[in-house]
Length: 538
Image 1 (tube, rainbow, N blue to C red):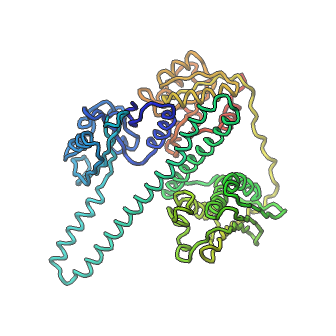
Image 2 (cartoon, one colour):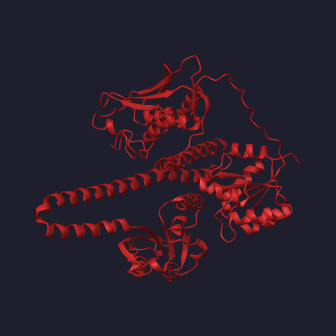
Image 3 (tube, one colour):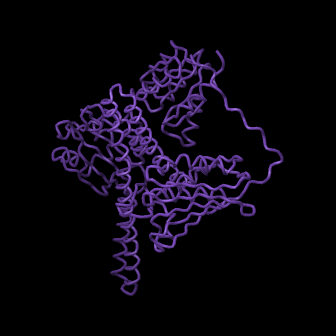
């Protein structure tokens, strides 16, 4: 039995467990798991550790009431026992706790059982939400009712205001619940395909065609999950003002071709025809090519998803004075006049009819608008109504003429096989799969399962490159990097942090710990190739 997830050990479980743990480790929702009878904490995600202001090592292995005393009262412990005994999920809303902060603090709990192989509860999973604002809102609403009783003359006005607040709150709750339901659906689809792919690889034996098809399918589904997580992170960065463009002079045609090529598998599966009409002269933009390619990829994918099979999609571009106009036109289901003004709102989908919807969180078009406006442009949507197709028009400014175009930089080429690489990761499957890929690329590789073992392996192996996870038990990646750098030989290897955290603060911390590079999982093979090519000649 897998205590963390409540799954029986089977051939496909390690893959699912890595994916589920990947999502949990990066989820903003504080989550903790405890063993059923003893309430001993067996798992804590980073969001929960930040929520209670403690290190994960101070929480795991201790009884919940001892590890989180502020969350142990007001019926929480009894709730854990009840869910473990009955196997029925429950919620406990707005429980007041003592806290070092001024004023009252309220937590809400969602608790559900972790089922073992016999389908009986083996533990419980707890999601904690800081519901102080909601509780304070309710208290303020109660105070408002007191005012209404005293001030009858203003009763109608105040009641209307309270109803408006309540309706807004309920609307936000419904929007959140809908988003979580769609997110669950979007994650389960690629997870199911990946699970099927694992079984196909087992059954395929030595059939190279079946193995290749299963591998291609799994790669597509994994890319879908990576794009989904990337879109969610982009929305978060935009909301907090932390998204930055990496501008360079780029030809629009190259960006459009890259987007069309990335969208082609979906377009072909839907049986659509894609035509591109680009002007013969270069249209040079001062833009972030990655974000701009994402704009046109999202528009093409949107056209493919919301067109009946066998439709036609046309992408065209033309100069318009000091700017350029790109149009993406489809013969799809169209957009009603009611929905057209809201088409670029976040978490809004073009159509919610299940037999038409092809998936998605309603993020793509919102990102299109944000990315285009960050480039100093604007985007419009046009449609004559349902069944008439639609057209998206992107307007972008052209770059100022350059005195002389610099010669293109020559991409670094690998300096040959045989480099010594050390992979340090407490996730055994992740470490061994990365090591095997590096060995197939011709390198000598060793692995270590935690920070302390990584330091020892580095002292013996003397690697030229160390790829190190950060969130490991005991000695974490930061401390392991410091210990390596403190050794007489520790300045020689190139240290690369291999992590799911990619914010600027995370990059600052790895740099301060002695890392040379900060790589965000999953890392593509070409990124590793370029990194190894940077190593000095032996």
